[in-house]
Length: 406
Ligand code: PLP
Image (cartoon, rainbow, N blue to C red; front, side, top):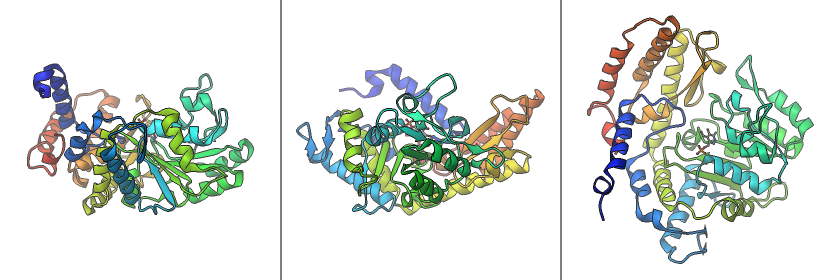
């Protein structure tokens, strides 16, 4: 039994190159993060060897006594991480990722061709919320269901709830989806609940981007108003790649969500759970209850605000005029030489790497210089200044550098 270096030096070398790339880059992709060494240890463990189709106590394979213990622990920690009462809320921790989790919900509560409304992709929504173009139904969600996306009010950059309401009354969707991949503000859950109730729709929140912030109570809480909440586990929550579905235990619109969702996950759309991921997720969810995690999430938000303020000082328009969460959307449409017309910048990953507000202000300055270079197509010192900055933030004394990127 060899370790990776001996068994497959080629893959080892690729991993090393990727590790170096991650270490040397300023990671500003809003959906990415650096998970902990402890999570990676669980993900790289023998848990990957086990088949366990079914749920704890109801498996289709033998030898699952410890896997049951693990999945129950993970479920308990998931409910605790979001301060949920286990008599009112349940959770399925088996979804393989965010898109499958969403499709599992649709499979559970909709019939083919039922109508849904999610935020349009060009306005910040996710593919799995029903994106389609005039020519093509792009995702499985728009292929199997009838989708009528809602949009932003382009003058404010905020969800146009009036239009959502008017359209919902005409379109009569069975499901309304809150949540986004690129939206810097809280959703107005009470308003969406009212709209959903007016048309008899389920209300689901896909909190993938902000689940860490929700767990630490630094943004609005979707659980107070939604019937179902889905999430990925690898973004602001800082866990392994995976997904979760939270559901109300009491029937909603006559549907027993618990059995419908559990059956949609397995046998509906998945086979054996990825137990190594569930192990890593349990570790992440334990961490989510710690004071350090809450401090981290507060820093994600304050860093993002510092970045936003600096960008605005530098004369940039931000969609919605700022940010309440972990990301900013810089509107570059007036800088006509630039394609695409905007950038999404997130603070979770570099906050994990120990960045504070000063470093994020510096990041804003680099972005500004980059934009200037592109616009003016002239040489600048950004290259060497950026290299110097990277040398500083990757030095051993820089906060938390020794705790990430095993
Ligand atoms: N939902 C939202 C809001 C997302 O932003 C994403 C991914 O970025 C997903 C779902 C999909 O997650 P995955 O890539 O794990 O399928």
